Image (cartoon, rainbow, N blue to C red; front, side, top):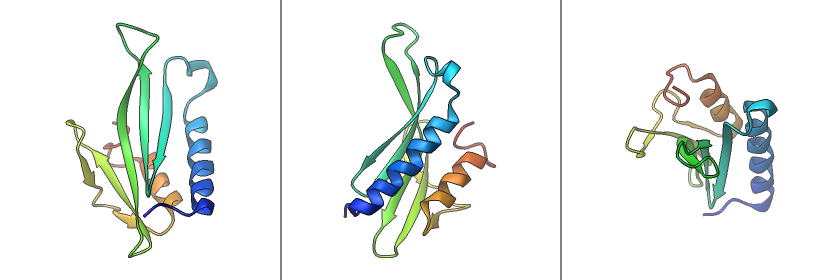
Length: 114
């Protein structure tokens, strides 16, 4: 189920601020942190210029946040080296998506940012 309009705006505001904070302006031509909001999930990506063609960007999955409407919680996932999503067991769900984003930022397991 898709997010409400209010929730979409809130999530967009949170992730836009996070992505802007994550990358200093002086390296924004070398590195980006971006997100995609679709339906009831948000995907966080790290993007860098393609080494053969600097005009193209290559994205790598960082984290996935999926809303479980039945439980009214967000679930946090990480991508393995093959790009498959797996639930992040140490901190799998939370009602507030900001707490899960904080967990991605802390990255105590180094599974998100390496």
